[in-house]
Length: 171
Figure 1 (tube, one colour):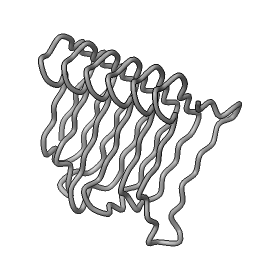
Figure 2 (spheres, one colour):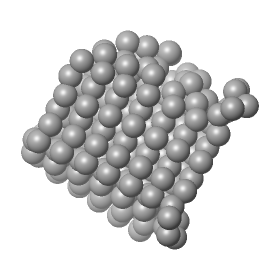
Figure 3 (cartoon, one colour):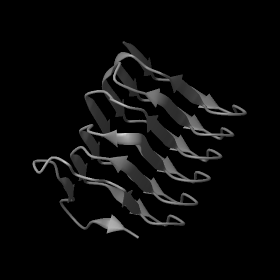
Figure 4 (tube, helix red, strand yellow):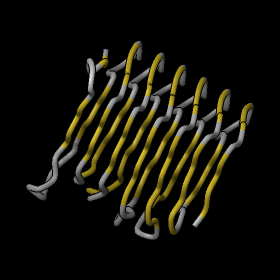
């Protein structure tokens, strides 16, 4: 288990915050991570030892690669919840979630703002679990506002749900 809260990280040559192979339940919240050479936040080798990962109220701006990057291996944990994060002006994606195998991980992205990133605002790839994207704004990104690719539902109960109370702002 672990938490990273209330920090400011900038100017790192590689990633601002790098977590490799987290186990147990993790909470990452209220951090400002900007102007780093790689990703603002990098979660690597996330696998079945992870319980719940909550990423809440963070700002990841002007990083050389992704604002928030998460790559997972076989048997990824139980739940990924992202609430109220902002990713802007990053060298690649604002938020990049990519699974190395078909992962059946429930994923929730709520009130995320992804703007002015060089590639996609939000990119999700190679999972099988249910996805909820609620109240999200993705604008002025160099690629798609929201990109979902190679997402294969093997369980008919799983679905991708995109909702916004006002306009869905993806351009």
